[in-house]
Image (cartoon, rainbow, N blue to C red; front, side, top):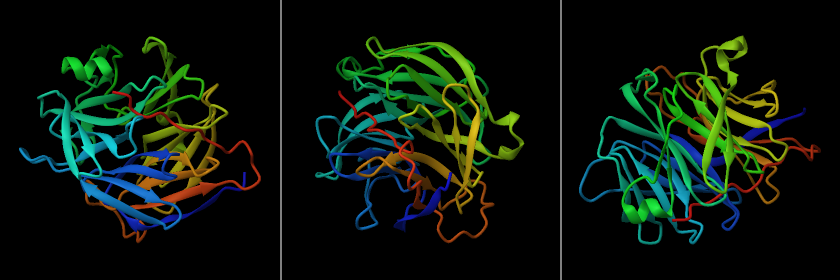
Length: 319
């Protein structure tokens, strides 16, 4: 395929993560993790507008996800390094509600996505050394947050999935029958059957193992999304690339180079969902990043003439 890779944004963030196209805005919502910002990218102006998520009663190190509400384009669920899931109001530029508090500083939330019922799925790991990407093995946990979670003041379902080191990028297929979930430090992608009606995961399988592909040596599966055909697109942390995997059989179909070392996540967007936006970071946790002038900016991948290169609207939070 004749893929085109180019810069989408003129601005950069410290650590772009968890992008999600909001068709109501016609803009890309993302998190600037270590900037502690909810950020919004406008592809027309090529500008990124950011607002800091700043708790009044504590200091935080980072934020991870910024999921728009289904009921409002100006409210977002944001996860904090302190273990809290909070509501952030863009217009008020303030945290307006604490949705959940795990009260465990050793727990590190990572990426998250919503299903078609508006439930948030996210995961956590136990940090040993963030700079070296070392987590306590098999201590990763998977959670979901729904309407009953916020009324009861707790996560309403803890799902035993086992054998995660650090649950990271995840994504549902368009039909909401499959959930693909990266294990960042384990360097594998897991596949679950998904029942959207009752919010249950089952039949876990090993879908893709980075360790079986020499062309991916030294890289890690970070954020992911799916296209309309069920293919899985993955940003490769420390790999300077995005890969395309056949969602039906786990075959590596494409490796597309991106001119920055640390790609962090991907999301289809644009009016026709025919642009694959790629977030990156301008900082390197272990300080070894070579000089790359466009780190932290948003890139876009397109494939003119290929009607199958197309995503779909991912879901918003309903709480």
